[in-house]
View 1 (cartoon, rainbow, N blue to C red):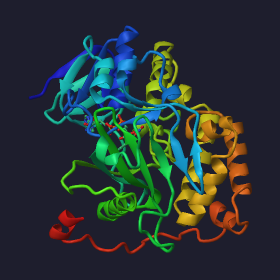
View 2 (view 1 turned 90 degrees about the vertical axis):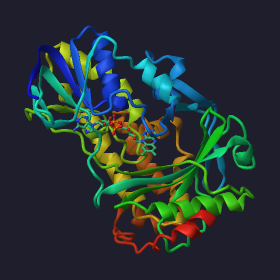
View 3 (view 1 turned 135 degrees about the horizontal axis):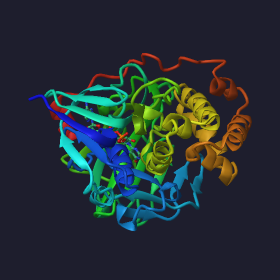
Length: 398
Ligand SMILES: Cc1cc2nc3c(=O)[nH]c(=O)nc-3n(C[C@H](O)[C@H](O)[C@H](O)COP(=O)(O)OP(=O)(O)OC[C@H]3O[C@@H](n4cnc5c(N)ncnc54)[C@H](O)[C@@H]3O)c2cc1C
């Protein structure tokens, strides 16, 4: 088939992950004529998305939240309660909140995404005044990764570690069975609001990531340390994606990359959803005003923030477990604004500069600061020889 759709569309959104869908939804609500394309436009996203509640835009209804955690815990050398509400998003709730009832939604896969034109695999051409490319991040390869293995466990089983309404954002306790000469990982464990808790061992910043079987082994080790035994048949989720996707350059005639494809994937957390939801209106306002959305989304302050976060990512990717624990201990005793500047704010460059400097300055012992800034052990974990995956029968027993 070969057909042309459009001529009259103001906006074309390629990719209906959470960020593309939010952009298309907000553009439609703003009165723009929108066409959107995805191979599976009605699919509920497979990943479990979370964020700080104050990062979400005001227009998002409460029904998009599945579980609220008032004061999540971060374990470094000690437990820190973070007085900042966090949440797990509801997949159906978020999907419904981003309705596309007045947009033209096409089932298809784009093979060419240009400034004003998109070609689909079946030859269909979509034309629009502005095209946004929301196809997600490219394949990982040897890039710096977020890797995670999550196991969904019934809340009663999880209770010895995660009480109702509680959550562990970062658990750096040395309970995952990894030795000091192995790349570090931490546990993320939150209730999902559906009677289950996800236990997810996570590695950030390693080139090429950490293998799933290694992350699973570590998760099970932690659970066993707390007396939690699971069947081995529980559902799981896997993450393995690059977190160093840069913001687009301005002044280049191109479709506008948005969401995780457009630099909104946070280099130190691997999150992009909340930031992208919030920035959707910035992009749409620029389109309506005839301004370049890339300039509106990426003023120099935001680019500087991205640049500094990338230094953070490189630091994360070369630390040992003890060093990571010491560094996060320093970070989570910094000011609330500083913590937000790293974790959330799109362009608070002064606070971010200060918190990065102070985190390095307060990491102890002194000599570890050289690793943090990359003067020593810069490539510590590059090409680390992880043990091979166990045979299937051993895996079941795990
Ligand atoms: C297990 C796991 C847990 C995660 N947890 C979090 C979290 O808690 N918080 C958070 O913010 N992030 C989390 N992430 C990261 C999260 O996945 C991304 O932040 C988010 O999905 C990015 O959204 P996106 O819309 O930019 O891209 P994607 O979600 O990757 O969506 C891209 C869309 O583009 C479509 N597409 C691709 N190619 C084409 C094409 N050629 N033509 C048309 N359409 C195309 C795809 O079908 C897809 O629908 C997690 C990731 C994983 C894997």
